[in-house]
Length: 396
Ligand code: ARG
Image (tube, rainbow, N blue to C red; front, side, top):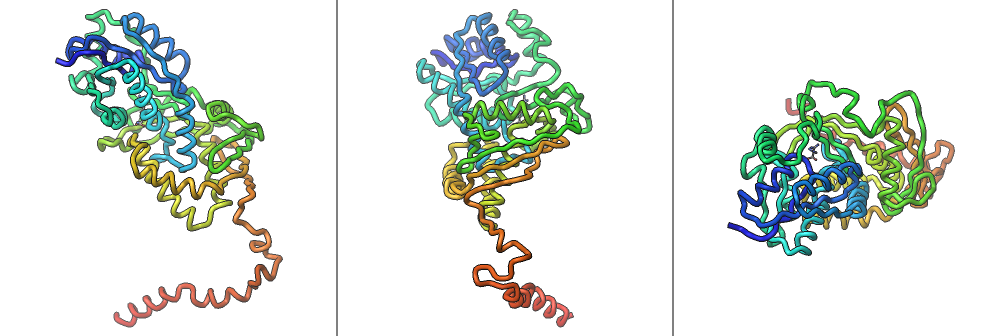
C-alpha cells in the first residue's frame, strides 16, 4: 500500500470530489492536497473549489499560472496553431496546470499525483505526459477504478460528500483565457443544433461592425489600438471586444487522441482575432517559401500541442524555426469584425517584402527588369507538362 500525501488536480467538480476519499480508502494515501491552477477560469470556480475543499477537509492550494499560460498562447499565435480549426485552449492549458501541480507536490513533499480525468479523453494523456517525467506515483482513480457518473453521484450521496446534484449543469464546460469549451449532454449528438445559451463569451453575430488594430513584435501581440498591453490583459480585452461581435465560435467534430470522434463547441474570440491578424502580417513580411514551410511547421506544432507534449524535442526544433522567421513579423494589422468574422483589412510593417513599384501596372522598369523580360519565362512555363503530354499522346 502506498502512503504519504497525494496532490490532486482539484476543480471541486464531481469527479475530483469523489477522488478525495477514494485516494485514501482505495489507494491508501494518508492525505490529499487539492490544487486548483488559475489559467483564467471565472472567479466563481475558485470560490466553489475552495468551499468544496473546506467541506471535504482537504488542504487547498490555488496557483496563479495565468502569465505562463498566456505566454504559451502567444507561442501558439506565433505558430498559427489550430487543431482541426480549434485554437487549442484546453490542450495548451493542461501542461501548464500539470507543471504547477507538480511544483506544489515537490514543495509539499508529496509521494504521488492524481487527476480525475476519465479514460476516454485527452486530458489524462496530457497530465500524465508531464507527470510521468517525475518520480511521483500517478493515480487516475476515475479511469483506474472504472467509475461512471451514476456511480459517482450515488457514492457522493452515500458519503454525504459536498456535491450539489445539479451543480455542474447540463453541459461540461472547460474555461481558460484562450477558450471556453462546451460539451456533453445532447451536444454530443452531431445533428443536435446548440441552443443559444451554450455561449457565454460571444453574442450572436449581428449587422454591427467594428475594427481593431493589433501590433506584433517578432510574431507576438504587444498592443491593441496602439496601447501596449500585458499578455493576460490583452487576451481578456480582445475576448470582450471580439466576443461582442460574435467572433470566435467553433462547432466541430474533433478527432481525439484515442481515436474517438467527439462533437465539440468552443468560443475563442481573442484567439480567432490574433491568429487572423498574425497570419495577415506574415503575408506581408514572409517570403512565399517561408509561408509554405511555416504551414507545415504550424501543423506539427499544433499536433504536439494538442497532445500536450509541449516539451517534445520537436517543439524545440519548431520553435527554433519560428524564432528565426518570426523576427520579421513585426507591424500592425487592422481587423474588421463583421458577421461573426475577424477579417484583416490593412497591414503595415517595416519588414514588408513588398515593393509598390514592382507590383504597380504603371512602372515599366524595376531593378533593371522590364515587362518584356517575362517573355522567356512565359515560353518555358509549363514546358515539362507539354513534353509529358506529347509523349503520352504519341504512345497511345
Ligand atoms: N476536447 C477538447 C480537447 O481535448 C476539450 C475538452 C474540454 N473539456 C470539457 N469538459 N469541456 O482539447
